[in-house]
Image (cartoon, rainbow, N blue to C red; front, side):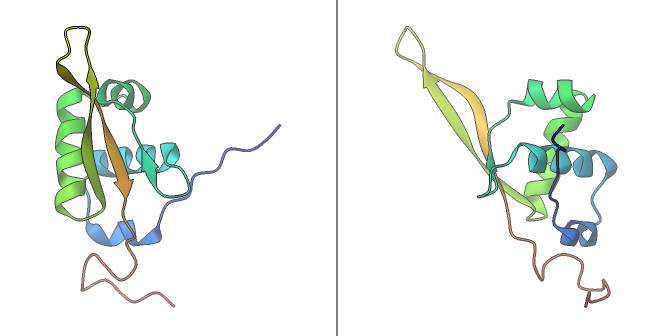
Length: 107
């Protein structure tokens, strides 16, 4: 049986994130590829984390405003040739040397 692993940057703890933002961040890290990209829909994040859609939306805004993630909306063409947002493409950002300036330096 192969173990599943989750890689999270330790610097995330310097950002003083809410518990829900941490939960969403950890889930995005779980979904991300080696380049830190992933595209789970908000409903999927809701189902996997147990958080409400409203809480997830707030957590994503918090993560973006604090510089932990970035995201771009993804669109699909519908049968009527209009664009419909399908999900966001999330990028886990490099947190090295960022976050709370008062946090102790790690050696």
